[in-house]
Image 1 (tube, rainbow, N blue to C red):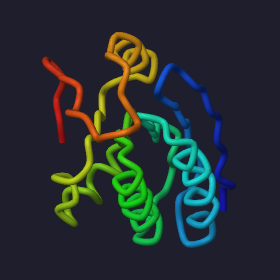
Image 2 (image 1 turned 180 degrees about the vertical axis):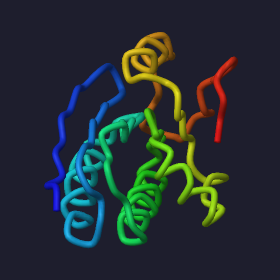
Image 3 (image 1 turned 30 degrees about the horizontal axis):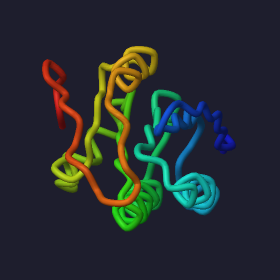
Length: 138
């Protein structure tokens, strides 16, 4: 088993969390706890860079669902960036691809450039999603 590792970068209204390792029953609570702590700060957007995920199972997928629900409760947009084929495949098979904004080919640096050009989001009320013109949306 490969331990789950996180790095975090904060931007104006956005937090990028880079996740690497195996996302399974053993690491699910760790990811949920880590991201929920970030969500409790009421940021406008959390980007999970999953490009370093080497394995995911049903429990790992469950962790993403739980994080998505918590993000919705606190009016925070959750985006998956650098989503590896193994994660995209699970999302498609389970038909969850309609519920997540996932960018498989978008490198973290490209996403951050896009985020840097987004207008500030108010934490008082949920706002519209930023335009992702020209980007593939899953």
